[in-house]
Figure 1 (cartoon, rainbow, N blue to C red):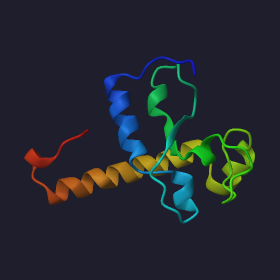
Figure 2 (tube, rainbow, N blue to C red):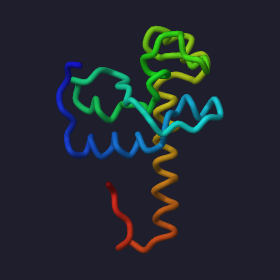
Figure 3 (spheres, one colour):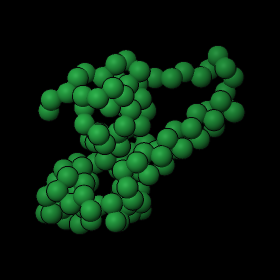
Length: 117
């Protein structure tokens, strides 16, 4: 795919959000940590790599042959959003979870133990 490479900060952010697992799978009650990063607004604009969602392959780009019936964002965007929510709403949920994870980490560890990967 075309696009500019992520900056170091963007790469760290994408790694952190990917560790949350597929947001759509979680809404369906499944845990899936194997994700394909979805760019909400392309890959070339400033900050584009901060506007991303962690989606598994089937929720990101697969056709309708998935045995679990997962709905793909690419190709069935309206159906995906009706089931899971708008992309920016999902991003807000992911951001809140990242913030909660960071808060929990800071409460259980001293400042010298907190690292951001």
